[in-house]
Structures are given as C-alpha cells and as structure tokens.
View 1 (cartoon, rainbow, N blue to C red):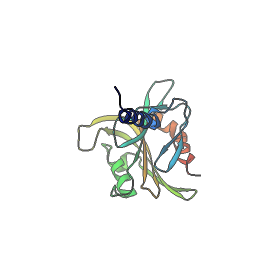
View 2 (tube, helix red, strand yellow; view 1 turned 120 degrees about the vertical axis):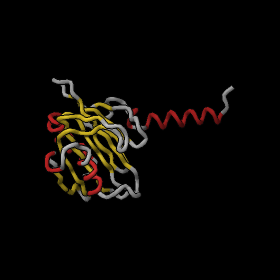
View 3 (spheres, rainbow, N blue to C red; view 1 turned 135 degrees about the vertical axis):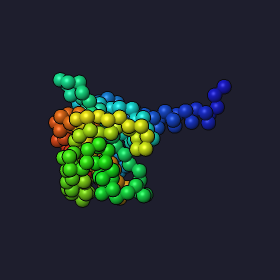
View 4 (cartoon, rainbow, N blue to C red; view 1 turned 90 degrees about the vertical axis):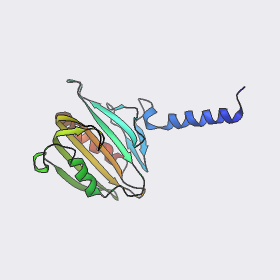
Length: 181
C-alpha cells in the first residue's frame, strides 16, 4: 500500500522535473534561468541537461550540413565565481591558439538596466571539463554572454563549428536580450 507521504514525494519529484527547462515541451519558447526569462529561437532544440552546473541547454543545427552547436546556460547565484574579466579570460583560454590568433572580441552593452558582456573567438577549441580530459575541436567558434544580475551572473556559451556560430550570432544575441527589456 502506498502511503500519502510517498505519493506526495513522487508528485513533488515529477513536478520539479516537468518545470525544468530540460523537460520543457519542444514547442515551449520561454524558459527561465535565474531571474531572467529567455525566449528560445524557434528552430533551436531543447537538450536534456547533463550536469548539475547547467541550468538549460539548447542545440542549434545547420539544416544543410547537419552540423550542430551547443548553447549552455550557467547560473551559480551570488558567490565567488570570479568577475566578468576572469570568466572571459577563461573562455578565451579554452582555445589552443594564443589570444591574438583566435580573433578574440569582447563587447560590453547595456540592455535596459542590465550590463551584458559578449565575447567571440574562433580556433581550436578544447572541449571538456577544466582539469579533465579534453578534445581538440579545430575550426570551432565560441559566442558567449555574461549577464550581470543581482542574484549572480548568468553565463551563456555557444560552441560549435565556427561558420554555424557566426550565422547563429544574431539569434543568440536576440535570445540573450529577450528577457532584459
């Protein structure tokens, strides 16, 4: 016989899973990370989050080549996750080539009252967890955004074949800024 407390625990677990962006319906365009609600581009797909550090994950696929790029959202809350510059430098350091060879770009903008730092780079990207095994991914691009909010910064990073990252950049920025107006 199932007790009321077991039923309640089951209900709470299922509800939590269904509210997670990773389990959002494929047609659901709006999702929340931290205090920001983002609008997912229509052709970008949901990906099940595979790490507790990730708050949401999307996939962009080139219809012609079938190549794909990953878009990952991180939000750690207030705390010692390093400043904007430290994180930008860490992202640029994920390439094998030196800084001056990866076409590194940084742009600071203010959308509404929120500061956003955009970054771009391209070269041989080292995929994998810092300190763990890494795979060299030649001709890759990175587009990132660090959104400075009161509850702790939100970090969004798109990585994939550099041509796909470049052609997806306008939609990436539109998605970032969708929740900041």
